[in-house]
Length: 350
Image (cartoon, rainbow, N blue to C red):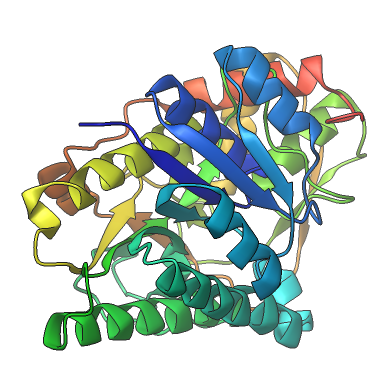
């Protein structure tokens, strides 16, 4: 396969920066668009140090049509990986308009720019939050969609838009057809094994693992465990945690699938990216203590709006159609998180 140019929106962020490493190491040319609202340019400098390769960076917002049109005119982009967007469930319940504007409107502008540039290969960063709550706690792609918070609903809306766009092209071909892979993430954690890039949230972390590691390093006093009365073995919420490097390797596999005969007639397909195994909040705390030797102080707090008791993937379809499977275990995820945290106690310092 000829390696071509991939545009990575949100490429300076946690998942985006790790994707840039894997893309560059796989031989792709990489162009990054990021408004740096929840990321730092330092991450991309470190991506270049890790890989020994350079990438092209544009500081722009995906809602800026003029900026995007200019980028597509300058760069020979073949595929887009779309990470850019807001991603905190709790915050989305407090700021729904902000989430719909960034995640839905931003994607509409991006799709318009792509369409005008005749770039129709897209890997979309979706989420397990798109699913209607399931009694079993395990989610496969065939289950009905029905998000229970604005963040998840913003992802459902974008998925619907992408399915509609791809379907029209199949009925009325307009040049090359749209080829879209919707990758539904479960809970990405971990960091690059070098410890040079990792999750660096602004302010108080929204996600569990960076919060735990901030407590362990001494930046935060204790962890708040939201809900201890769920119908789970220890009463705390269960999630499918996946190493960020495994996750981004799924994006390389998705690009390969899009360029193979699996997408020969175009279309839009969804894939879960998860391990298929769930861990509770207290499982994470206990394993973190065992791996790092650090004590994690925690207190129980009321449940958060929009949180499920249990959520883990059925990843069989990605294995079958993308030839992708996660291979790092929870100890790997925690060891790499801690390595990043110890080497970067204040995150990225510009």
